[in-house]
Length: 314
Image 1 (cartoon, helix red, strand yellow):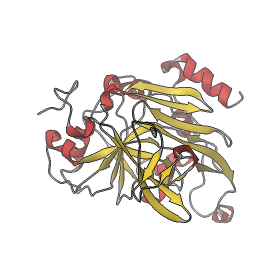
Image 2 (tube, rainbow, N blue to C red):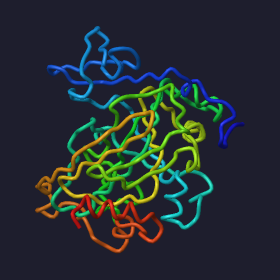
Image 3 (cartoon, rainbow, N blue to C red):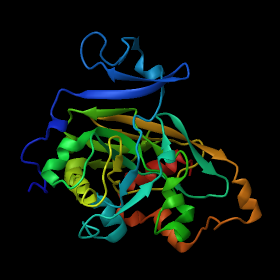
Image 4 (tube, rainbow, N blue to C red):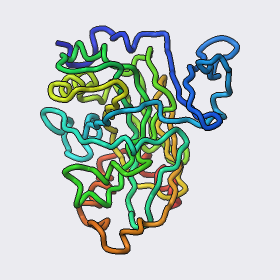
């Protein structure tokens, strides 16, 4: 069984030509289109009804409609070294879920409530399931993947004290999953580099093939032992080192070479009305919250830290 890297051969989902499908909002209705890859219209978007559009000028919707979103806790060696000081965090992957209501489109607003101090970015690639998947081997799992998307797995770390076991509010609040703008296939994922930027400055970077601990084929086979994956379901494949908090006004983006770029702008909103009535566990600024939100600066490259300080005006 082909669990390890490098892969002996590229699965079909990574073999060219490159195809990118996007979903957008026009006149109040949702439309699908395909990016033009070659010729005079390269870089433009051809809708399924034949119209040709400027890709940059559109309003994008998430290109997925999942029944569930499952995320790997740690799947990059640099992240494991930062948080655990070892290249592999656990013997096998561990997971949490985000509700579909956390989905956000490219160039959307990422909401930071006034009573929360720590909103962390995590640049990731998302795997989109293309057909019903249950009880498969890792080698078979590739055939169930529709494609890949850039994603931002944002997190309100202020709720980690109460929700660490479930991550429900930490990772599940509305707007905390910008994804897209498209689903891409026909690109060798493991030859690509993932970068997260804040206001255009690089704060995370990893060569996916060099840092991956568990590939999507292993993760899908693991999850599908007991959970049926449905078409449109999303699996988030973890983030490299240096997840840190950002402020209202910051523009956060995840760009993956060959795949695409998704961004969102952090926007301040009032605290929920029920919070003033003492409903629920209040956000906290405890040592455990700060441990995750602020990370281990001594274990990450200096230029990431410097770029983040510049972006935040510190």
